[in-house]
Length: 228
Image (cartoon, rainbow, N blue to C red):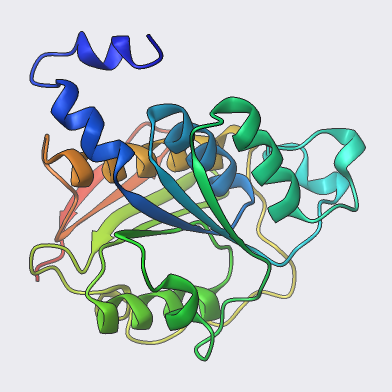
């Protein structure tokens, strides 16, 4: 009964749901992007979800990080995220890693998962994820949300290059965090979850070798071919 609306879809049957239940997906970051990703992946029936984050919940997170309540301020994001996922889908197996992703820690943290999703908010972690996924041969579902826009792509899948191929030079971090409208990370995170499901089930066209750029204010969205 839980997944019957999936089974009402054309070209989606019990075999596809079984693929989801047998899959393992690591979500790197449990903030704004991660909130949407974790909720929808768990609800969709992904069998094993990894969560990596090291931060605690602050009041300024609550405009976009919908996994958390006001009473959770000061608690570890990984702890509260795991609790919420278990409430939503008790059948989902969780691996929780309360660490900071770095060049040295990324490979061990990502090992054993079929797909890695970037829900981080900083460049060093993103490049560390990209390097580990390249070495492990694991698809890397990338998303970012800043201001009134966002980006989405899938790296290291079916011959596609990586994040560092698209952006060879690591940008300098700004002095303060960028502004972002609350729903924007949820919009991008939900799109990332859809890419994950398409990869697992083999249904639809994946954003491999392509970069989707969203401009919410103008609705002038672009799909760019970025090659292999």
